[in-house]
Image (cartoon, rainbow, N blue to C red; front, top):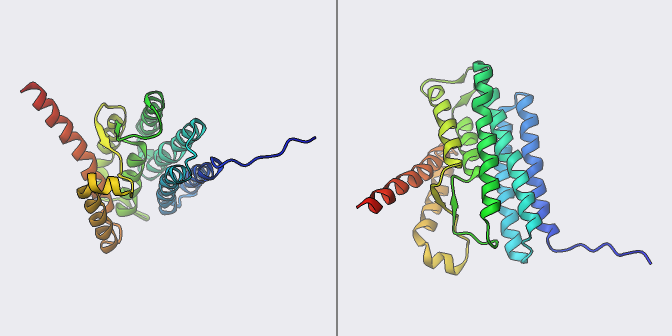
Length: 240
């Protein structure tokens, strides 16, 4: 008697994870073809799939260790390799070997960040991240390119001068001990506990629509800076 092929509920969120990985691969392909705007938007699409796979896993109650590992592998591609190759092709190629090393820092730091996350993960629910989440790093870079990269001239001053410091900062933050809050889930419990965060998310989304996406980069910058300032403040409080 032939064994029956059984499709489990975990297949559904894993399909979204696979689409995340596929979008990241397509981004690399489009970067190699010099279609940089498509490549940047594909990273954003990958982030949408990344958010959906977690939401679907919670909704179907099908979270699994396989899903966690698959999610991390797809994140290395979509939010590590894809933005690193994109920023290299749009700007860092002019620095030759040094540009390769700087771009690679995004992949290396992101890989360590994900490995540490998997080792420290207990259960499937988390209230905060230790270190900057790799999708935030990738979205910061892709939104920066969408807003300030122009064809054929590339990045104009002063934006071209901040690229290397930005990449190095993102890489350091990913492997740092700075805590970043998770995005609250659309539940009554999270709505009651974190109403201000929900209002900020709604306000940010409305502002992004009004400005045709040009403000998205600054939203991510504010999120990053908030984590840094909160960390510095907590160190100051401990000493006093």
